[in-house]
Length: 303
Picture 1 (cartoon, rainbow, N blue to C red):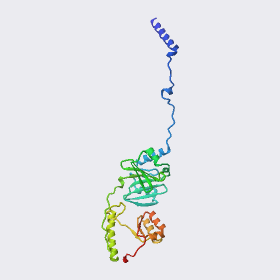
Picture 2: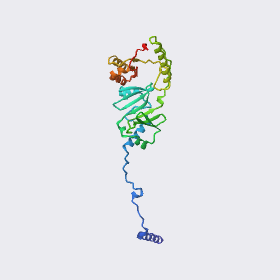
Picture 3: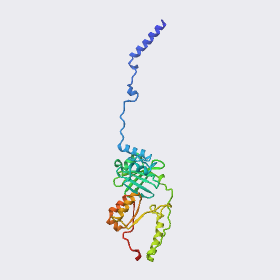
């Protein structure tokens, strides 16, 4: 009897609560409870931002877009095995630069063949400006001007630098470079030696001028990175060819050097260069050094 009374009382209370509008519970929709958890569309990333992020990520590993070879672990011989011989090889400072024009990639490598610089000239880069770069990547560690270009440099690791290079007149990026400073360190610094040799064919005045020039050029070389007097202390042979160019002899020498994969040093006479510019251009594109042997050869025995 007591249990029945208790049950009746509970039912009466529930009925009163249900009939009282002021006591109604408000039930929120599930979406409201969880912050409107409908599926959101992914936020669209700007193409330039995506490209810059890709460039930065590759640079941290020593690579640029368009190249499977980088500035951390690869050598120029590995590139040649897969890509073949480069279109041209140029000497610059203490290294060499091999250009693969069809893929828009240039590799800088040292005497040991280790790649220390990878440059990309991809057409994608023309979507970027220096303003884009600063907005996405931030201010560079270094800004400088070289000839008619701006160069923005970012340090991406302790050894690697990422450089953006473009003309000052429109600020559109021309190319990028991933540069490994550690691999450019020279094992052995070159040092100047005395220039020796005598001649009994020069007049007293001409011989005096020759000796004065030798003294001056040694002093000059100490302050210039790309001027070498007798080179490093290594067993090396320099093949030099004077007085050209012409269409027969010079062309034959270029072919022979290319056949044996040897770089020559061509000391051309300026007046002949004007006659045969195509020969000079060919010598240069094959990776040889093009040097000056004055504009006109004079008979120094008369001076």
